[in-house]
Structure formats: C-alpha cells, structure tokens
Length: 112
Image 1 (tube, rainbow, N blue to C red):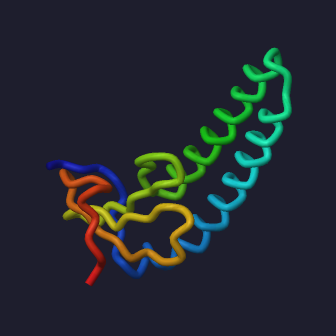
Image 2 (cartoon, rainbow, N blue to C red):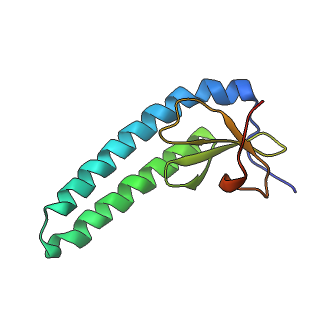
C-alpha cells in the first residue's frame, strides 16, 4: 500500500506525544466548556454553539495534521510507521498501542 505520510519511529512518536497530549487536553477542555454552555442554552442558541464546537474540533484536527499525525477519530491519532500505526487516544497517558493499516482501532494490540 503506497503511503506518502511521514514515517514515525517509536522514539519519534514518543517524543511528539507530550505536544499532542497538551494540545488535545486544551481542545477537550474547550469542547467540554462549549458543551456545558449548550446544556444551559436556549434552543435558538444551539446551532451557534454547535458551530463553535465543530470549529474547535476542526482546529484540533488541523493542528494534529500539521504535526504529521493522522486523525482517525475524535481525540484519536495514528503515527504511520511504514508497516502500520502506533495508535493513541485521549486520555491515554502513554503511546502503548499498534495496529496494521487494515486493522483499525478495534485491532489495536499492545506495543511489545
């Protein structure tokens, strides 16, 4: 399967994880604040609040892609290593999972 993405070693992925965790924590906090606002808002305000939430998630997605990781879901990123992915999902503390290109999140196995 040809891939043009950045290739990550386990060492470079581990080195990038603190930055990814910090940016993701900020985005999660902003999303939670936005959802809290929505809970107390009038129905007429929901569309505007939902747009802000989508914008926050979009900003996070662009930041992750700029760092060279692939966004595979909400707060879920993969580091392409050339034979599959090192996989991380918020709020995991460490990069401890791997899956092949065809396996996806449900096929994750611990990194040995």
